[in-house]
Every structure is written in structure tokens, then in C-alpha cells.
Image: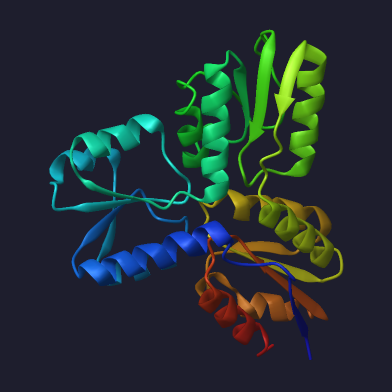
Length: 281
């Protein structure tokens, strides 16, 4: 029989669970349709579940169609100060479910940019979390995806990171900034849960024949888990749910062990479904 191993740390992180629970509670209390600015989390199954509970994602442009009777939830990734001000100015009810760890980063870049520091953000410039953070320092940050910095570094620099980044990228960023700047502050804002999840996935993927990484295809932290596991196990697959599993293909490999991990936006019920299916091998 195949041994199925679940990573010690997998699935919903604190910030995501908090945002989902709070949004469901608000909808239940109001008993009417409410909105999230963008998908609440990067997981299609959860987004569909929320829609079934009268919670719908809208874009920034859709705000103009809402009234003072409507409620908008800011997702865990956070948004810029400009967006929050726009919602408040329109009189729309605002619920800020930004992850506290992300809020901490926003406050730091806001404070130090006001004090004359140039902000450097390690992360994906197109990710909503990074876009939101940049919006708290006048959208003037230097953003690096791998820690390599080509722009000229000014005298004073403050360095932060997207919460789901990899530690190796953070170390590279700090080394490069140290060589280029005269004075810098560095705040390692990689979420501790992210670090633990990545380490757990790294360890497990070194000891299994097949590795499954569960999470949205547009989920940044899940993609990084996939990259980490792929470096250790050649038979690593990024799946969103059991529909993406080719169980017959796995059987042909005759694995002795199959490992499973999941991104921060993956609910327990999807993980359970995958585990149950694997146990049939």
C-alpha cells in the first residue's frame, strides 16, 4: 500500500482564515449580498463557495456602481491608501480584512517613506499585496522579484518583503542593498507561517516519490511551494483540487510514498478530498 504523507504545515494561514471567517460572518449578520474588492483569496473553489453564500468579487472600477447601502470587504492582500480613501469618500461601508502582517508592512513603508527613506520591496510587482504596499509610499518603491537591483540606490533605504517570499531571495536582496547603499533599514516581513510551510514542504519533498502541491494556479505562495518541491522531487504536481489528479498516472509510477502540501489559500476540505483519493491507490 502507498504511504501518503501530509506536510506538517499546510493549508489556510491565519490571515486567510481570518478574512474568510470575517466575511462569512458579516454576510450572515447583514443577510444580503456583499462584495470583496477582488477575489477574497486566490482559490477558485473558495471563491465559488463564497458566491454561493452571496459574497461576490468586484473590481476597482465597479465601485462606482455601489451605493452607501453596500458593503465592501478588503481582502487579506490589502490595498493602497488611495483605494481605502476612495471607498470612504463614496460613503460605502468598508470592512478591512487585510492580514495583520500585511498591515504591519504598510505602516512601515508609510512611516519610513515619510522620513525620507527610499522603499525597496522584495516581491512580485503584479501581485495585489505588493501593489497595495507600494500604494502606502506614493507608488515610488523599487520592486525586485529576485533580490537583484538595477536601479540606482539613494542614500537612505528601507527594505521590506512580500509576506510569501522565499528566504533565499531575502538574503540576496539584503546583500545587494548592503553593497549599494550607505544607510539602510531592513525588516524581514516574510510571514512566519510562510517560512514554516516552505520548510515543511522542502523536508517532505526530499523523502517521497511523488509530491502534490494543492492551491490556486494564481496563488503566489502555492507557486513558491511548487518550485521548492520540484527542486527535490521530479514527480511534483501543482493541482487545485482532486479534478487535477491523474490517479492512473500516479499508479503507473508505483510510488511507495506520496507527499502532500497546500498553499495558504487552500481550505481543509480540499486537502481532505485529495488525501482520501490518494489512499485508494
